[in-house]
Image 1: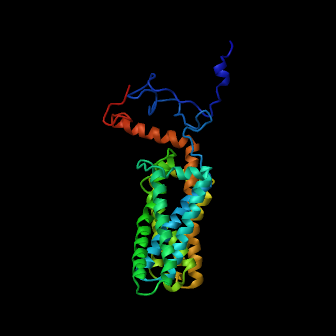
Image 2: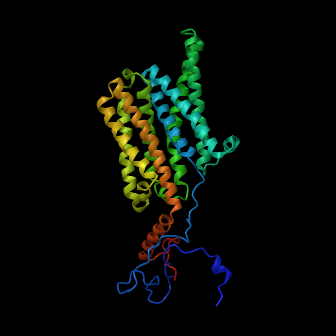
Length: 361
């Protein structure tokens, strides 16, 4: 008997095939699934003809770098706004410079991943509220504009005559620029988490509840950590140290909560290459929090603790990035959660895509 050309070209099956539902021995859904008298063990899904089901995003290292730089800019912007309100000039100016530099570097990383810089400009041609990338582009631009204006006013104000009308106007404009930067900072830190959750990568998609909180707290840890490196201890010893500890603790706590809720979809965090990044992030963030709480009152202690917090934030972004890419490439993390949802829907007597309806036969 000759083999049809279709069978010759068909890729090999990497793993056993499951029996189609609706056969003899069925039950409500058909097949032998859940039959205690079955003599054949339940087949375990390992592959989809050797291919992934979900197409991973065509992103490379500039994207996790962009995620980190956006968080660093947002955290630094919040610190600068607080320093402006409390009258700490050196902390304010250096945090603003860090925020603007991080925004510029993040924009460059995004343009590098897009391949052509004009593609980044094309995202500014319209406002699409249903697109996290479109909204995020405007958030990034708004934050950069207010931060740049604040730095420019800070350079101009010393040259104006004290008490003059121009000096007072510049002071009011400086306050508005600081407020605008603080307004855009939290969305800047959170929208990248929404961007990842909006994809089909299973680990990213299912972490939509906790991931924004992880990114915002990580951004706060990074911003306060960089301030502890660049600013004098006299201006960071107090609220900045407390915010650094709070951000790090929140990042670790919500991250652990996210892993527990994800269940099987958290496995990519424990697989290479995400495993190395995830462990590094946990160690550095914990060390930075302890160092900021105990040794942050000294120049060396503040610098080392701040460096650990910044490094931990960077590793957090790269770890989550690689975990999501791994979950998209491995079909197990697409099929198994679907089957779990199907089983739960069957127990409730409804279809997966038809809430309240009967399971189709």
